[in-house]
Amino acid sequence: MTDERFWEIVEFIDWPRKDYEEVKAEILMELAPREIKELRDGLGKRTGKLRSLFDETREEMEDNFYVSGDGLDDCVNHIVGLGRFAYENCVECPQAIVDRYRAGEYTESFSYAIPGVNDVAKLSRDYYQFRSTKYVDQFREIGNTDKFASEYKAVANRVADVLENFPYHYSTIGRFKRAGAIEEETEEALLDRLIEYEEELSEDVKGTPVNNLISDYRTYFKKSEEQL
Image (tube, rainbow, N blue to C red; front, side, top):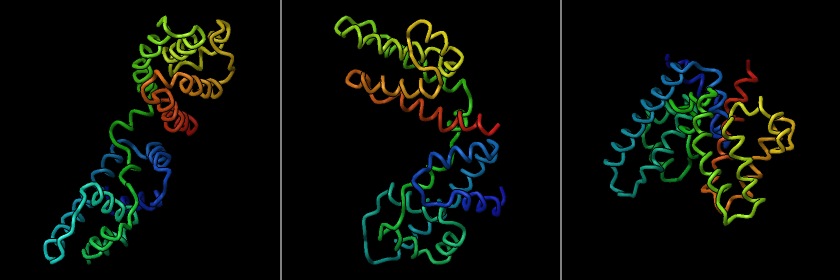
């Protein structure tokens, strides 16, 4: 990847911003996997340079201050995210890196907006099928445990029914509806209902696996389909 192309993509990201998952999805849809890898490599090369300059400058200072590894990582990523001018200014004047770090003038973390290898898989149906099947047993166990009320068990089994077919559930909505498993007639309504069901089961479900799955599905896969 050329230097010009790298900074063109950085400018497109328009850092700082909070919706880095949205940015990541946009990059996944715009760039080929090879270019995404080159983008991450380019980011690593530039943040590594800034980190080295930071260390060299700090060693020359009489003021010995504490440095958080995570904080410094956020700082140097932030500088690259601000664009070419900010980066080159810090390369020419490394004291600017130290001053920004000590003042806490950086946002966590530009690197979150850059897709990784695993993120590329989020554009594939197979990725969601693999993830969803991991959760089926968890909800079936709730649905088959006698200590739970029948309505509670029924909710868990409804979630498991859909997850067994995820992300092909949209083609089985009619069958679920005829069987009395769901009332929803559209995919979006069904996904919203699944999230509500998980909230009902929150005392017995670790974390929010269904919500996380659906969030990724909507952010990455559904948007990539809309681009076609």
